[in-house]
Length: 263
Image: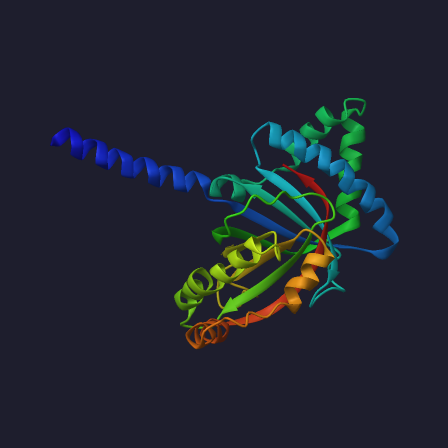
């Protein structure tokens, strides 16, 4: 009996540990570049892809995306979104310091000397501004095997749960909206959906508390999903959807195209 209890407890701890290891953490960096420096920055982000591949090989990150904004509430302030994926919250908060980035650059570009690498980074820092950075934890996602690749389309929906409705909003996303998105995935109307909770910044002045990421393989799939209407939805389901919508404010929606990806 004691052995059975031991294995039961061990199994529960193992499952809990495995689930924690599978949790995904993501840093969203909204990047602003002056118009006269856009061409130089496009060259720089191609260089950064190789650098982040070195960080992936070193197990410092789980992945990296570079998105070009097509539209959004603050479109004039941002042109790009960089997303870095981590499997650990401490790794996410520590990020990749400048020294590590330069070391990975040396590996990716062995023909560059230390002085050239340092100059490259100083030039890149001077041509960009990151007026908004979000540290996030994924708390729900669809069951799919969607593969990220250049040309993929996504909408990043910044949400702010209304005061006193934080848990109600997350419950609505998980129990009402997730099944809807899962159905979209199974019907070929969407590639992937996930719900993320903001870790930082926090407080009443924060612009958002959550973010939903809606991914489509191309514009055709995106527009088909927008025009789809579920005529079989019950009255109870419609009420649940409306309650979920009323539990949060949709602050901004950013539509973006994936240009570079590291996995």
